[in-house]
Image (cartoon, rainbow, N blue to C red; front, side):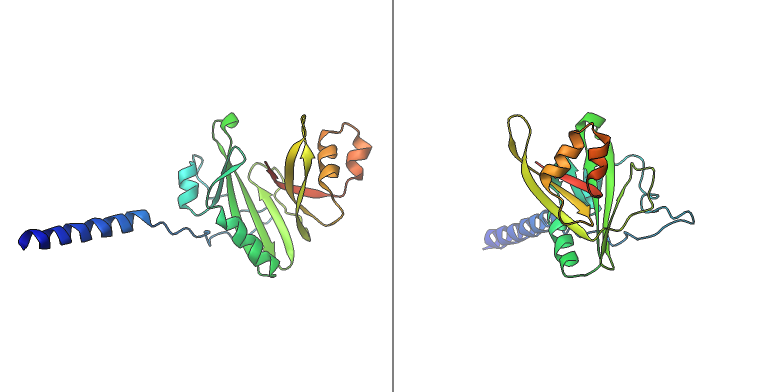
Length: 190
């Protein structure tokens, strides 16, 4: 009888340990602040440590990509889209790691605020932020051989197409590039 009671207690303790260790609650950091310094430059990247790992980004509740593939907290993108499509202010920090750059992180903060989208990249020199009306997911085929691809961009002109953006990226004709309506690339879909 004593063995059975000890066995039940041990099983209960193991279950609780597994339950506590196996549950991870991920929530987008609410500390993203749409703030600017006296020169009008976004200040959101000022407090990021110089050495940052994908695990740190995941634990901080960021949308994490490695070599253009989502590796952690992918649902945060859907949460951002859902909130912004309902007209609610929203923010999302993306941490992008690329093996070709020694896994050094690049951060992008995406905001939907008062009806406009804003994107700030940690590697950009100008962080003044430009408002865009639309977040567009554009799909098409690209490459040799052709394969299904896509881009997600911010734009003020809904007439932008995948082909227009991709041909502009590879064109050496300055007049042609200038003729493409302004957009800001968020990410490639591979």
